[in-house]
Length: 64
Length: 147
Image (cartoon, rainbow over all chains, first blue to last red):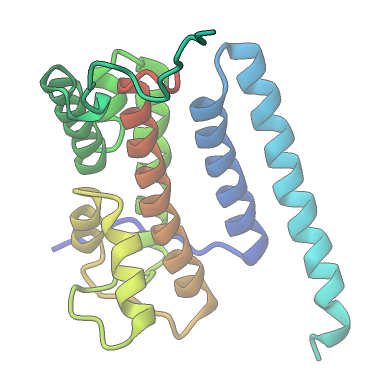
């Protein structure tokens, strides 16, 4: 019996996937029209990733 | 000298708008749409003919469930030992029938001894919470509060 698909993602890849998928959902649910949705999705994705990387750098001094 | 009397209350009593029988049917319809959206991600919006939102909800929740299960994230069972497991179960069940899809995809069970499994657990919880948000949005749209 074969098992389901397997994924081996790094922390950054998982974060980018999370940011992309959640941004798409938020964009479709909160905005109407293709242009407004695309703008919202891009901005939300950018903020998710940048804030994630920023928090990562803030935690860097305490990582060891 | 006579002054006109001002009555603070209306002369005819009126029932609260929510209890009117005419409002009961749309409320039941809105709840049905929300439950449909919870059971199958995107179905609530599809019933309202919001095709773009329906597709977005379906594919985003499906992606998170498939990748989360593929990373061997923890799909919390009903019998959680502590508060975190119970909360995790509630979040996972937010994905509706996709909760069982995640369980069926994870034939080898979860593996949270590695970071990969931990990330998968978060993705599965996100799928559930996102679907609950979408179901709530469909409910509000059916009631005419959002579009």
